[in-house]
Image (tube, rainbow, N blue to C red; front, top):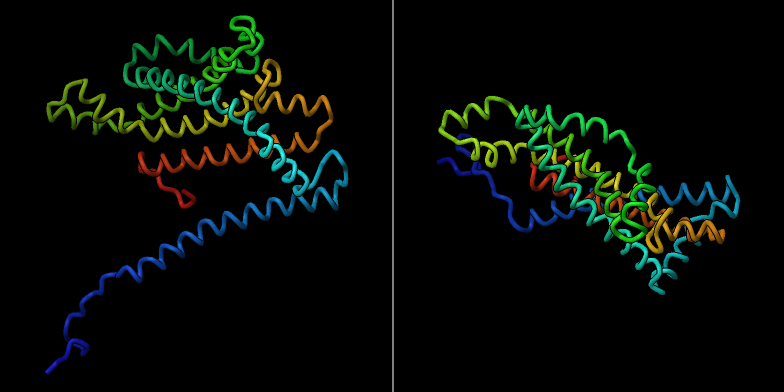
Length: 278
């Protein structure tokens, strides 16, 4: 008589148990975060080698003094205050600009008359750099928060508008025709077909616009602000505080990387866009 282990009988596939699943998850996490750790470590090693053995100048400090200065600025609350001020401006301006950009992008991508009507505004104003409007914003709104928020919103709105419109225009016509054949109204097509299909393009546009917002806020704070990363950089330049300058640069890099990772996660989770580094 054949036994279950003898040839000739179908073998049952063992289901992975908790004991086998946990190590695989840990290995995946170690692979992902381990590689990131190696990448960051190599970045700072290169920085240290260049600063100590290649440049050898007080104007390009190695990472250890910069980190020591960053810890001191965190402990006395200065760095947290400057970063918080910049982040608040970025978030408010970015949300306003993204909201306007999504609405305009959906309208211009969905309705040809709206596209024809608004295209002259979009294709002319988007070529005016936001940095060039800093002086105008200060004249209009003063040196308060409104001028900085206006600049961030301006730098965001056109990027999100164009990517959203491109996402809507790229929706296969078969999807829309299928919805119409099933009796969907224009309202239902817009909210249940067009909008979900445009989500990946919207998130991509917002991700690109966020990087642009970081660049713009630093420029705006360099010119007209009493606090924020840009103002912190300006004061460091005036007093030749090289370590403070590099603390601000590293802070911007870490913040940008963290926010970009959040957008990648959102793209993977909500829009189904998976990439190996997400």
